[in-house]
Image (tube, rainbow, N blue to C red):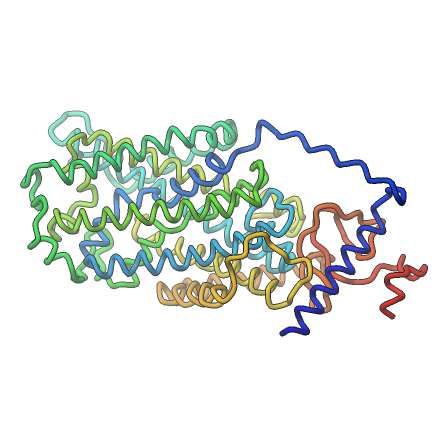
Amino acid sequence: MADSKGQRLLLFDLDESIRYSKFDNSVEGVAPSPKPKPKEDSTKLSMMIGVFLPCILAIFSGILFLRLGFAVGQGGVLESFGMFLLGYCIVTLTSLSLSAISTNGAVEGGGAYFMISRALGPELGGSIGVMFFIASIFSSSLYCIGFTEALTDNFGETGFYTGNSTFQLPAGQWYTFAYNSAVLFVCLLVCIIGAQMFAKTQLIIFLTVMASIISSIVSFVFAKPDLVIGYTGFNVDTFRDNLFSNYTIDHSTMKVQSFVSVFAVIFNGCVGIMAGANLSGELKNPSKAIPVGTLGALAYTGLIYIFLIFLIAFTCTRELLLDNYNFLQYINLCPVLVAIGIFASTLSAALSALIGASRVLIALANDSLFGHVMIGELNTIASLVSIFFLLAYAAVNLACLALDLASAPNFRPSFKYFSWHIHPGMIGCLVMMFLIDVMWASVSVVIFMILILVVYFRTGGSQWGMKPNMVVMGFYDEVLPEDSLFQVQNPRRGYYGTVAEDTEGGNALYNCLL
């Protein structure tokens, strides 16, 4: 271990010396002129607007309002807490890996795809980029379904506001399809016309969602018992009844639930950690904003989830939680706030997923990995979304693991809080994939392997990313491809350590090693 570290430091010092001798044009005895500070782009997003708030809104999505009671009703307090603990362990460990990679040099647009491809090469990076793109598209449809579910719960035939009214939104499979399509079309228009404007409205959306959450908390305290059938107010007997699991048939899917099936739904209330990383190209300082904003969002949302689980368990019977997904609105002292909160959170999460997917797709297109060709029910689609996200998160942990185990001399992230966690983080993602659904997990892995082969044969053996015979790998901020000891295909891409032909002219530092 000591020899490996010593070799790593030696190679790094060699690399730094070469870079200094190659690119430093200062005269001996004369201090080099300081580099002018780059002008701050006022159009770039801060950590708060570009990472913290998007991650919070993507994590909450519609799960907090529409499925948190479902989890408590099926799994009870203990297993619901266990589900969130497991989910947050997976995403937190992944966030630590993401933070390490994102602080290891310049990060451009493309988020997770950019980081993984520059660490592991285009074969793995491009494949994971496509999988993450698919996961984001599926998750946007999940959030649109949540929006439509809230719409029909409020304005449908038995809606909260139109139950006794002559005006009611028509119900049915094709009507639901039309509503979902309309919501997606609105998201498309926003993405095309005003994605930057949407990012800058995150604070307003966040305040709206928080107003809904605060109103729900206040209502749990002050709402009178029996305001709706199944609401008891704070009652120890109610909490005791909700303490343990009682898995039954879900009325929406007509399937008997289990820990894994409920976790597959609830895990979508933990994902969203990539919402800020996907906007890496639009952040003022992505290397600092991504770690702080992502981990801060996880801590913030985790505390709110735990608090609400206990409030629900103390005040709502299991029958209410299982029969009425929208129960928070029925027990709220100001029901319209919950409706607005659901609409705002689901629409914001859908937009965030689509915008993030578009950034990944743009990065894939810029690298020309695939040429010119790229081609229900909430509880049901949630399992599929979870599988694709788990695969993407496993790849992030794999990228960090590969960089660390290879002792790459220029893998020197400023974020130091990662080490042994990488292994259980990656393994946990893979295990939960197959526990959720063996068939779809296998399909996703097969697709992933096919994509690796497609990218490999299309690129014909790439000149960037990690290679078996590498000397260095990772990111560099300022490397000129025509005047470097090491070959690089593109100045913005990472490189590996094939010695360039120009060293044969007698580079003193290089010859000393021989």
